Length: 122
Image (cartoon, rainbow, N blue to C red; front, side):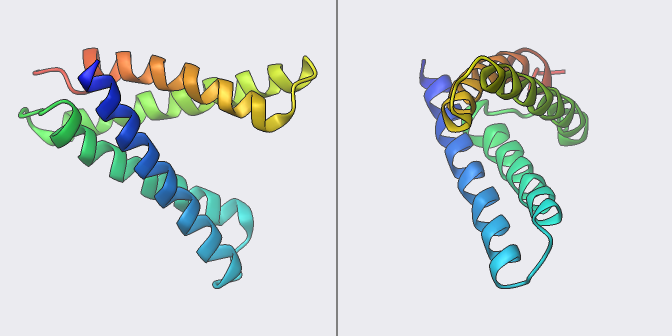
């Protein structure tokens, strides 16, 4: 449970960074929202990788293979989240409620994948 709590804390920090960059790029930089969102997601993924590597999983193996595996997991999690949000909206849920549910499911799935695969001892 300690690792899951750390994973959630790291995820909250990565999500905050994602949204901060998104808002700053759109509001101050006048970037298109889709580009700012992509930049924010990339920033959030990097924060999540390094914080999870050191803080959540205390991973000591070479970083490059873990970085690649983590990003496969992150991409799969993003796709799963998108599918769950769409399914929730089609079922009549408000999109924010669907996103909140998807976030919980994706967090659990990516935690398991990252613990077992992305940050395995190699």
